[in-house]
Every structure is written in structure tokens, then in C-alpha cells.
Image 1 (cartoon, rainbow, N blue to C red):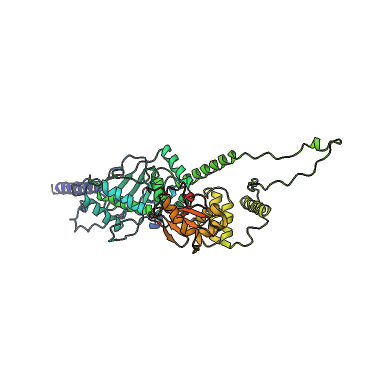
Image 2 (tube, rainbow, N blue to C red):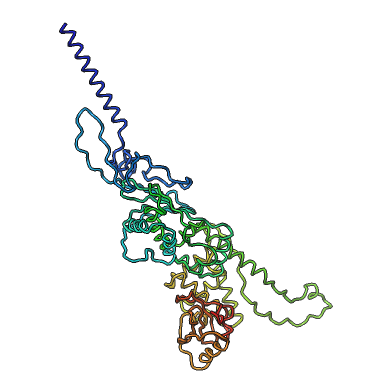
Length: 530
């Protein structure tokens, strides 16, 4: 009887142990991931830098999804940025100890540079940069982006919080694609939020108008390559910069403000991207940098070809060979030398061959030799003999057809500017002056001088007689009171017209020099009302 009771007690103890083991197993299976995991999901690190193998832990943005995937963590009724409760410990046979404080989760990153291409660019996160200045961005186009954000916002407090997030470096790496900006933004919760800002892309008709405006003035493309955005280019009839209500932010946080503070932080940091590179704005509108430059090259080549077709060569005078060699025909005296051709023409295209000379260098040498020979034939003087290094570099660049838009011409401009210790923008401006008036045009651009009384003093009454306002004199220059048109008197007695953006001292040669100051202003928009 006693032996039977012992067997029953042993069986009951075994059943209790099995039940306890089952409860422990089930509790561990349904336990939420611990926030102590460096990835916030309980997984082991797979980044090679952390000792693991496989793909990096940084998730790549999905540019095809209309809205980011929902958060897979447990739902919470807390405010958007309040800290979540730590996970409950698993139920085991021993009483639970004190819960360890939750450590901040390492924010995820959207950076995937390997996936970048012509229509996708990833930028690293900005370091914290506090600022007391009322202007968040540094450039006028960056602040125009900020104005579009602030004018379309419904809550100034959310904007202030978002600006603080941006200054404190809460925005992770930013990915830009046509019509979309993506990034993760850290709030008060350990898990960052997925934020996107949409902007309408331009259609083909808008891009055609934009390319025509850029190709019309070589200074525009020179400014873009120097990471500048001229106001005349942004206000050319195509809406490059957004207006109030054009930005469409979305965020995975529960806050439904327009925008929430996380989306506002991403918009503020995007303004800093535009400060550094205006081509980011063009990518947002739908075109990459390489595609734009290639389109400008094709447009410039097409314009040059049409201009060449409109100039029909005059037929050469001569005698047929059969008539000249006829025995009964009396040969006339030799004809007079042919007149000097109007320009030296273009050399043939040199094919590239393995191990042979650079065809671009051959083309440049042949073009320069033809230009010098043409000058010797017409004037009897070599134009290179008395030029400085900078003047000769400008002459070589000006002899290259086009406006510095093709890849070969851009390489030539960069090489010549570097050799003369100047920038490509300086060379482009000097080329415009050289094409306006040659050596004297370059001197007018770079060398102000004090002209004697006479022609210069008579210019202002002539301008007033033409119902133009009183121009401001300074040395050999007369400047419109609005500061957008200028006349410069050269030592050759000609007036050289210049233009600049109003309020900017950025003068570019425009138009044709003339002995009459009023005639030099023809076509520059210097009307009595202006």
C-alpha cells in the first residue's frame, strides 16, 4: 500500500514538471522582441562590421509603394513620441527579477549607395548643426523651399519641433528620386519613422521650355555647374521651385498633422541638400544631371547645325579645264587672289585609333592652326604673339564652337581654366567678352580705365534725350539706376553693353558694341519705363 502511494506521488511530480516546462516554452515562444537588441527586433547583427555575415541591416527604400509599410511592433495607445513600456519578461519557474531599463534603439538607415544611379541619389545624414538664424538654408533657392513648407503648414508648433529635430541631427540618410524624398526620422520612440515628401514632376513640354532657356545663355549652365541657381533660370516660366501646398508629406507616425514634426524635419534637411547641389531640385522634378547635360549638348549641336545650313557658301570663280587647255584658246592672265574667307571653317573629324593621338587634341590643334593662319592671311599678324597665358586660354576656348555644353568642350574649359588658375565660370564670361569684341572686348571686361572728357561726357545727355534714366558713371562705365544694364567704353571708342541680375554685381557681355551708346542698348530691355 505504501509502495503504491509512492508511485502515485512520483507520477504527480513528473506531471507537474512537464506542465511547468510546457508553460515556460510557450511563454518564451510568445515573448515580444527585446528592445535591448541592437536592431530593435531581437535579431542578431548581420552587418560585416558587427561580426556577422550576409546582407547589411539597412533597409532600402521602396519607391514603388504608395505609403510605407505599417510598423510590425505591438500597438500602443501612447502619444506619438512617448517612450514605450519595456517588454515583459518570460514566465519561468523562478520569480522574475527587476526589469532592465530599455536602451535607445539604433535607428535604421535608408542609405543604399549601391542602388544609386541616374535617377536615384542617396545622401548621408547631416551632423547636428544648431542655428539661431531665422534663415534655415544658406541659398535663396533653399529658403524658397523652406517658405513653401512653412506657407503650406497648418501648425507652427509642429514646424518648430521639426526644425529642432533637423538641427539636432534626427534625420537619417536621405534618398532622392523623381518626385520623392525618403528618409527615416528619429523621434522620442526608439524605432524611427519612415517619412516621404512628394513633389510633382515636370512634363516633357516644361522640360523643353527649360532646356531652351538654359541653352540660350551659356551663363546658366556655367552657374549650375558651379552649384548656383540663377533667379532668371528659376523664373523662366517653368515652376522649378515649389509653392505653398506643392509639398505632400507623409509619415508612418500616428500624428496626422500637415505636416507632422518628422516630415517637417525632412523638409528642412532637404533645403540643405538644395544648398549644396541645385541638381537635386532638377532630379526631384524628374531629370538627372547626366540626362540634362546630354540634352543640352544635343540641343546646342542642333542649333549650330541649323546656323551652318543657313550660310550657303558662295560659288568659286574659275574656268573649265577643257577650255583652259584648248590649243586654239588664248589663255587670259592669272585671276586676282581670292578674297580672305570670312572664317577658317572647321577641321575634319579625326577618328580614334588604339595607340594613336587623342582625336580631341588633334581637333583642337587643327582648329587653332586654321584660326591663326586665317588671321595671318587677313592681317599679316599672328594674334598669339603678344598674348598672356590667360588671354591665350580665352582665345583657345572662344575658338571652340558651341557654348561649353558638350562633354569635350567642358573638358577643354576645365583644363584651360586650371592652367590659368581661374574657374570655368570665369573662363565662360571671358569667352563671351572675347566673342563680343575680341582682345579689346576682354580688356573692357577686366580693365576699368579713366577715359578723357569728350565722348564719355556726351553719352549721358544722349541717353537722357532718348528718354532713358540718368545712368550712374564710374570710370569708363555707365550703369542703369536699377542696376541691370551697363555700358562700358572701350579704348577703341566703342560702347560695350552688359547685363546683370538686378541687385547683383554679376555682369555678362550682351549684344553688339556700337559707337552710339543708345544703339548699343538696343535689344537689352533698357526702355524708358525700366
